[in-house]
Length: 228
Ligand SMILES: [Zn+2]
Ligand SMILES: [Zn+2]
Image 1 (cartoon, helix red, strand yellow):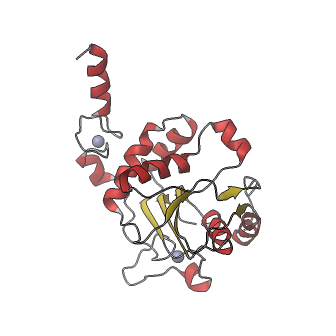
Image 2 (spheres, helix red, strand yellow):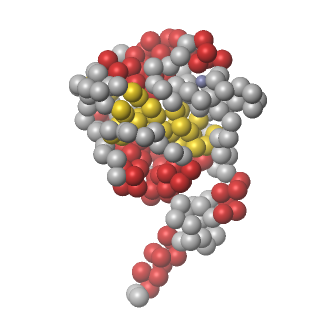
């Protein structure tokens, strides 16, 4: 082996959180895995973190049921997951996405009879600016691990949703509902893929666009969930 190959190998075998040597395929050593902010108790529909074991559905979903069937989230959006997501988005550390996809497929069970994974799309100009869509990269890694096909052409983002600061949840949702358009996806069972779920307005808007384009069922899978 050349010295270069030895170096590469040692980088691959480092834990992505503590840099200790690990052989775990997810890239996270077992002691870091023990400390990660796993989302253990959450709403059965929107994955909102819940405190009580007796509560199955959050208050928000009881009041107004989302159009998607269920969101699966792996982590609370806390240290060190928040830092990892920031590194992926803003420091181009896209190699971490494969590790997160590994953890997602190891820990979460995808709904049965899925037709395709659809990553939450970005606006074309934002995509050109960043150079990649982290949700699409995550969907590609998940597709490699699960053999589920990706559809990254049907759902499109047509309006910016960035100027949402200071808007109420209702106003954000209205703003987001016009943000996506979708070509026909008749009777498809779809799993949306995104990195972080915050208010759920983006997922709700994408899900409504898919359902109005004929989708049979929409679920979602995300790396991390924040409280609203
Ligand atoms: Zn570690
Ligand atoms: Zn909920």
